[in-house]
Length: 200
Image 1 (cartoon, rainbow, N blue to C red):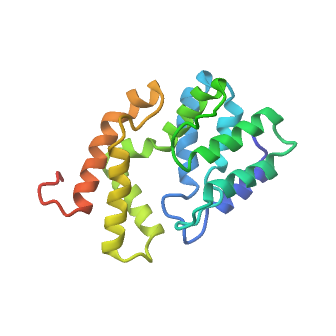
Image 2 (image 1 turned 120 degrees about the vertical axis):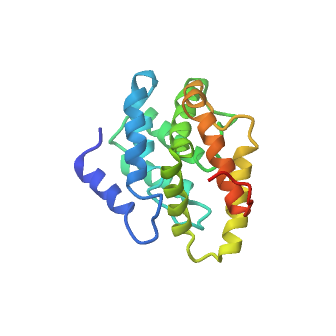
């Protein structure tokens, strides 16, 4: 949907020693899911572009990654995609900061954003081996953080997700991912908290 030169540039942005989980393999995995649901989307172009651009700017301890990635998308795609789709792309990327639907989101964008955000969190429902590799990738991105501090901080983040009434925002996401994700999260939290009763 985007030209080869633009995709090559985005792939380059996703490379480098600081990237662990948030490498080019992440949007590629989401694009596989995208292909399975594209017929259900109101604006598949917007969702596709948000997938390949939402982590274009990623600094592990940066607080404005999402806003900066959205701004980059607005600049790179100006004149490339229709203005209405570009506005949606920016909102989709910005929403990854909280993984929640904004209160002021136009009603016709709700379903697409819910599915996009669910795709972004689909890794939580991966096989135990793939989930452990994801956690190792996150640890790599925070490798400068001392182990005890990382464990406490990571456990708190995962506990925040687990405390949600629903991890996933769309019926599709809840059916496909919810149960497995909760098992993975509970297992990882127990490991991070050094619970000897944690399942292997």
